[in-house]
Amino acid sequence: MTASRSPTPTPPTPAKPAKPATPATPAQGPAAEAVSRLQVAPATAQGLNPAQQKFNRLLARVHQLEQLLQALQHSADALRTPHLQRMDALQRRVAQAQRALAHCLHERLQQDEELAAPQQRLIRERLRCLVPSVPEPQDEAERQAWQLLQSAYRPPPASLQERQAGLQALLDQFEQWTGQRPQVPGLDRMESPEQLLEALLRQEQERRQATAERRAERRAKRKPTARQQQEHARAQDASGALRAIYRQLASALHPDRERDPIERERKQALMSQANAANERGDLLALLRLQLAVEQVDEGSIARLGEERLASLSLLLQRQVGMLDKELAEVQARLSHELGVPVSACDLQLLPDDLSEQQQALEQRAQCLEDDLRRVREGGDGALRRWLREQARLAQEHARAVGPSG
Image 1 (cartoon, rainbow, N blue to C red):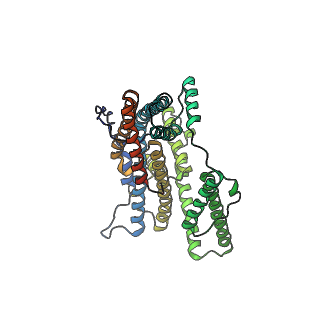
Image 2: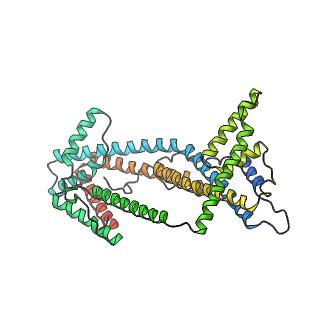
Image 3: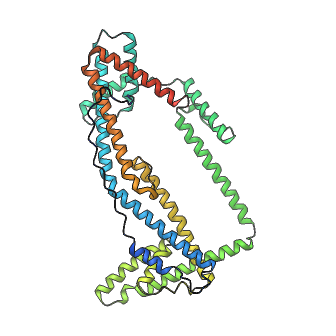
């Protein structure tokens, strides 16, 4: 692949792509109001007891995570399509310039008899670097021509000795990280570091699974401690509390008991929400529905005893854990999909990050197109200067990456 550089002479500055507007944050009013109504308010000058404080804190955290997830999805939905379309167009432009440059270099190598041996060697090095990394064109005739070029400049396969040396080096690194030298069956038949890495990861997964199974067997044989028994009882109380809230809602919202068709349709929609919330253990959603059908009011939670409140807090704690995991998964998926780090806490930076990514790819396309013009139209002198420049850039890149790169 041709090394990126600042073109000389400097081409006209590319037109900046239109900066996408920052997506609006989803409305938070009704949801925030419901959380405010469900939180325990101090009834006396002594304030809230620890159980009430914990319930309020967890309720606010669940609401915060829900809002972060909603804002993240909203922003991604608004930005994803235009960004990916722009990046796809730029990637096609880069690939087209790379293929044209490779064909042009190949033609110069075949036709120009005045090129000295060092220039011919540099051209072949550029082609061996450039050709394998470029996707094939869609057009059938162009694809056949490109495949011929690929076969001509495909890097020679590594020898068995070189492959085994690379695998042993990877094993050495693994031993440094873990302190153990793994025994990998079939190592002599492996042809790539990826195969070895997959085998090592599979071994590590099997080892961890076996360790977890042994620990589970040991725990099963032990008599539960008083604390474990207490935690089990709380978990059962929490599940019972969730079922009780759901049953109250189901009794009030059962659509078959409603004769008015409009009211029946409304209750059917609310019942669907209650079913979904119950299946995912979403206590906050069920409590909001209770507010909507007036099964609870601002003082209902405050009147609960500490044990009951502790059960509800346990449900909220589980919900916080699931939402934290979901948020991390969504951020990781969007980061991979969009090609930039995505954080729900820094969504205002996302449009600028995407714009910078587009501009960097457009600059790369322009550099390649400028390289193509120099090689195609500049004559032998321009070609020699370009080759020397590429060799220098390759050396600088190798020094920057270092031996490990």
